[in-house]
Amino acid sequence: MTFHARSIVEFGHFLNRVSDSLLNGKPLRNSLELIREQFDGYAAVLVIEDRQRTGETYYVFTEIDENMADASGAALPRSAQLTYLTERCQPMSASLLTADESARYTLWVFRDRAAGKFDDDAASVCEILVSQLARGVETSWRMGATEVERTLYSDVMDKLYVGVVILDHSGKIVRASDAAARLLEARDGLQIQGNRLRATSAKEDRDFQAAVKSAMQQADSNDAPLSRGLSLTKQSGSRNLGVIVRPIHAAKDNAAAANSAVAVYIRDPETNPEVEGELVRQLFDLTPAEAAVARRLTAGLSLEDAATSLDISRNTARAHLRSIFSKSGITRQTELVRLVLNSAVILGQGPRQAA
Image (cartoon, rainbow, N blue to C red; front, side, top):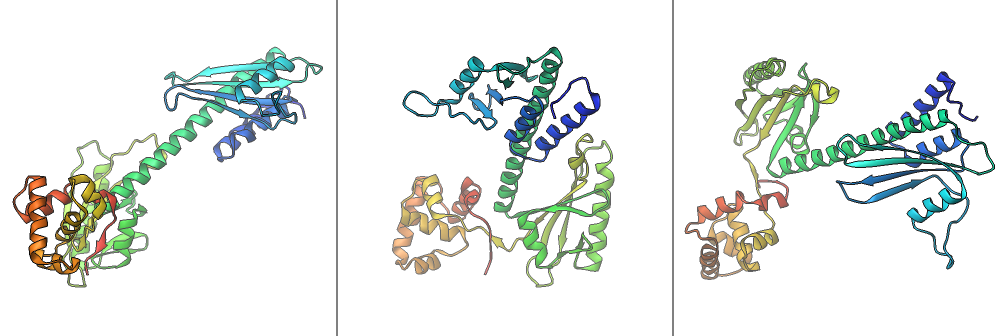
């Protein structure tokens, strides 16, 4: 059915269909196809001039029956295809420049020249639609960027051997990082019961729950957030878990963020870094043999054990160590361990459990 701008109900249904297509993550071409159909058009095109992110111009077309090609039969560039349509069809367009002037959106709708002309109502609707399309694309880009950032931050926390659990205002778990999930599966010091975090020791759990309750109260106030640290006993007998409970002051106008009240950071001292030898070599300008020695010393081996694992003599290992000291400007083995673990090298690999 052809769209009539004067029908408010029809316009509302049409706009909802376009919005749903955008919000449901369907290809942008789907929304343009809805627009083409409702205007009884031959084609619809969205041109996005991305001024800041990439500096490029993007063209999104509905399917076009005619094969637009040059004299040699090769497909025309998208910009030339748009020119072709404007020259041979009846065009209508509307543009929108984003508030920060980072991008310009232009919606084109084309009809056959023999069809009825676009009237003023159609032009007004076209202006509304380009605004709707721009909001949908900008939202999609922001959501994509946010997800990339979240993934990267989570990955860094995992490689720093820190598990993170987010709790809502009732104390229930909203999400947990991969590192946290691995720690909680062991049920050694901290566990999940009824979608809530609990210390495996009843006495320590009372203190932990009190810390969580206090953090939830702080999350609802404007006071500066105060963290609380706890040491939770592991039934396995290995060293205690280190836990930090911290309130989250989230933006109230963001529903997803506002549901987050407390962050629980978990660190297992039994996790040892297993740094990548090639990264050690690159960051500290070492030879492969020197990097292999540095990697094993960082993992906690003595120089003798490092030599044995590499099947080299103790004197050779000592020579490598002297060369490492000379290149890095340090004089002690403990300094080497601290230097490597405080460098970016630990971001190249995930944690491993001590044997």
